[in-house]
Image (cartoon, rainbow, N blue to C red; front, top):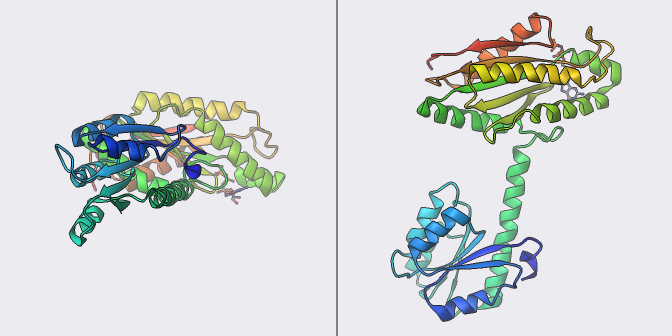
Length: 309
Ligand SMILES: Nc1nc2c(ncn2[C@@H]2O[C@H](COP(=O)(O)OP(=O)(O)OP(=O)(O)O)[C@@H](O)[C@H]2O)c(=O)[nH]1
């Protein structure tokens, strides 16, 4: 299966009949990982722990139907985008419609024409890759490669809802490069662009938790989303970031400090409650304004304990 072999694909065949399983398995060359589940429950636990790329699904199984399994997998974020293709012996209208309604990517009727099945899988794989690429590009800033404003606007409300529900600490940094207009004036816009990339890279080196995210907010402003970071952690991180950027000794002749620096506005709470994204970004922006007024190359902090609305 040439189109699937430039990456190794992980295929789960959900089939209780040994002969049918062997026929389907023979379609794939040895570079692919082929697994089998003979029951619905086994399929669900397999997908939760190993997440295959493709499932070839029989409809009738000894415990739950393939249609039910498909619905369960689609409702779980971790398994929702697995490619699921039904292999059905019943091709009546009602069965076909049930497959689509359950969330199938495609289905083929028995007796299976293996060439058709291969072609259909190749088409699904191609579509999946394109969708992944599109998702990645639509959330990334073209210049710096960090997340973009669209990602921030999508993710911040979700992260806050989770933090509010679990009453965990939450923190937002708004980071702005100091005297950046003068930097562009002095070194040119292309050097300004390189400088933005370097600053993004240096900031991202300090974000070590999987849940931390760095976004370009616009122009020379960045936002860090830091779920689980409390006041003490935020103070340490902001201090480290400000010092680290200045210690890179990126020449900035027109800055009073002679080297490039950033200012950081920190909005933080130790117990997240009833806070919406607008309140957070406003607080981080106000803190940034204070940091700028302190003379730049600095940070200021705003504690948010309870802001409603
Ligand atoms: N090279 C480059 N410059 C940008 C980009 N986006 C915004 N800028 C520039 O960033 C500069 C921001 O200037 P200001 O908002 O006046 O702020 P500043 O000069 O950094 O001054 P303070 O923030 O007060 O320290 C402007 O000159 C923008 O043109 C970009 O993508 N590339």
